[in-house]
Length: 258
Length: 211
Ligand SMILES: Nc1ncnc2c1ncn2[C@@H]1O[C@H](COP(=O)(O)OP(=O)(O)O)[C@@H](O)[C@H]1O
Ligand SMILES: [Mg+2]
Image (tube, rainbow over all chains, first blue to last red; front, side, top):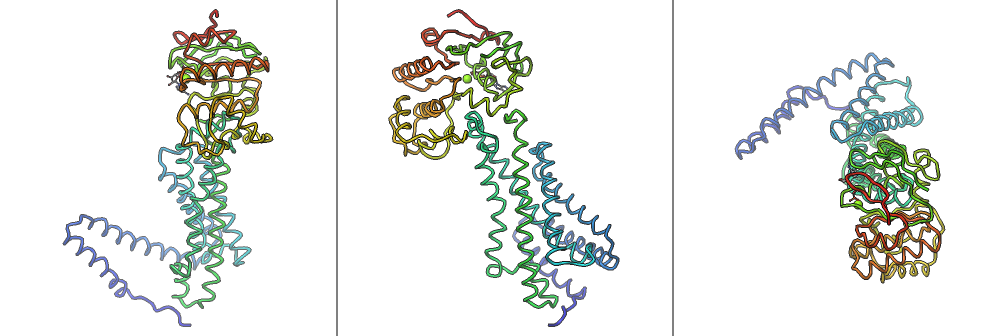
C-alpha cells in the first residue's frame, strides 16, 4: 500500500474550478445565490485550514487537559446547536434533559469505544480521541434533534389523548407510551438505514479517508464496523435518556400536563 | 365526601364553601364557559385550585396520589377522545391503564347495550359519529365500576330520546350500587328530576341551590 499523494496548494486551488463553474452558471441564469455559494466556500476553506493547524499542534503536543477541553467544547457546541434549533419551544426542564442526555450518552460510549474496544494508549491520544468523539457527538446530536422534534410534535398533536389517558387513570409513562415509541423510531431510523446501505449505497467517509491514506481496506472496514456500532450505541443511549427523562418534564408532580 | 374550602381557580371561578355528599347525585348547572368542567377537573385532580383546598374523605386532595385518585373518582370528558383501534380497544382502554383483569366479550357487549350503542366490538372507532363516540366513552368509564363518577354533559350530542334513556340508565345504576355522581348538565329539568343536590355557578361563584 502506498501512502497518500500530497496535494499542493496549486492542486487545491484547481478544485475551486467547481465553485467557479457553478458561480458562472448561477449568474448566467440569474439565480441570486452567488453570495451564499462564495461565502460557504470561503468559510469552509478557512475553517478547515484553521482546524488543520490546530490538530497538527495538538497531535504534536498531546495533553490530557487539551483532549478533555476539546471534548467539552464539542459537547457544548452540540447542546447549544439543539437549543438554537428549537428556540423558544424548550422548557427549562427539557433543556437540562437534553444537555444531560447528549453529554452522558456520548461520553459513556466514547470511553467504552476508545478504552475497551480500540484500547488506545495513552488514554487521551488526540489522534483517536478527537475524530471519534466528533463522529459520536455529531451523530448523537442529529439523533437528539430528531428525537426532540418528534417528542414536541407528539406532545402537541396527541395532547388530547394523553389527557384522556390520564383521566382514565393512566400513569404518565403509560399515557405517553406511543409518543415515546414513535419518537424512538424517528430518532434511530436514520442510523439503522445508514447501516443497511453501508458499503452498497455509499462508502462511509471515515473508511474512504483511511483507504485514501494507505490503510488496508480490511483494516479500514474493521474500524468502520466498530465505529458504526459505536455510533449506533451512542445515538440510542442518548435518545433513550432523552425519552426516559424528557417525558417527565411535560408533567408536574401532581401528574398533570403542564 | 368532597369539601371545597375557599377555592379559587385563576380569576375564572370561586367556590367559597361547598359539600358534595357521598352516595348522592349532585347536578352542576351553569352557563357555558362558567367553569363546570373546571370544577370536575379539580375534583379528579386534572387541575389543582390556584388557592384554597379541596378535601376528599377529609383528606386534602394535594396529599392524595393523583393517579390512584383518578382511578377512584372517574371522570367522563365533555368531548369524547378515542384511542386508535376499534370499539373493543376503546372499551378496554381504562382497564388496560389500570392493569385490571379484562372482561369477556359478552360483558363488553352488555355494556354497549346499556349505553344504547348498537355497534360490533370490531368496528373501527373513526367510523363512529360524535354521539356514538360519546356513548362509547360513557361505556368505557361505566366498565371501570368506580365508586365516584364525574360525568361532563354525558348526553350533549345525543337525540332527545336516547339522552333520556342514557340519563335514566346512569341514574339507576348509580342509585342501585350506592355510588356517588356529579353530573354536569345544561338542562335544569334533568337536574331537578334526577338529583339530590344542585350546585349552580353564577357570576363566577359556585353555590348550592335548593332542588
Ligand atoms: N387551565 C386553564 N387555564 C386558563 N383558562 C382556563 C383553563 N381551563 C379553563 N379555562 C377557561 O375557564 C372558563 C371556564 O371553562 P369550563 O370550565 O370549560 O366551562 P364550562 O364547562 O362551564 O363550559 C373558560 O373560559 C375556559 O377558557
Ligand atoms: Mg364544559
